[in-house]
Length: 216
Image (cartoon, rainbow, N blue to C red; front, side):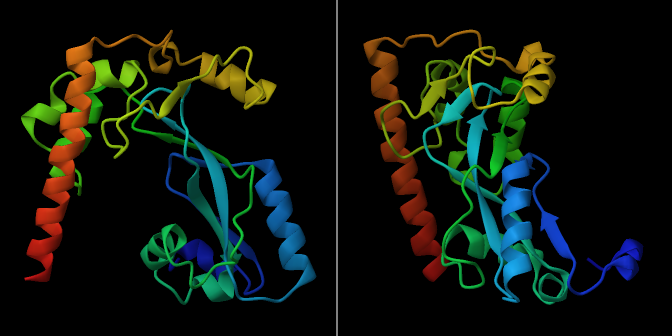
């Protein structure tokens, strides 16, 4: 936050920060304005957001904790990365209860080529092996998240036209990106479904090995 614009920010001003694919909702903004106006706490607030993965209408069954809000005088004293990590786990700096209906997180959208590039250059190299990348988009299009530790389906198809998740304006924006919309869920055969279970086992052991190596 040591930006030229920061000289215009006052200590009591409320600052929101997100990853570029985390979109806070108007409900979240209203809630934090109300919360900060009623107390002088130095605690931060985290938005509980609906997550869409790989396609803008393929919803994760687990919530995402994304956009963070705090007063400038508090947020300027702590590493933004520290706050990001803390918001996902211990929440030492945060109000204990996330703000629900906090917006949306669109993760990994952009097609198979972009996703493979993200795997190959990302921080979780336990996912970067040929067997994982083979047919990865076929599994995703059937509702299986290759990065989830659960063998069953963890992604739900949403019809943007009929869902109540999005307001009219956001629906119009999303529908203008046809290449990011999944038309329907496909099906996997028995062998392809068994592959997912095997992948989960391989990833578990890779993570365990990495954990042990980090302790040595």
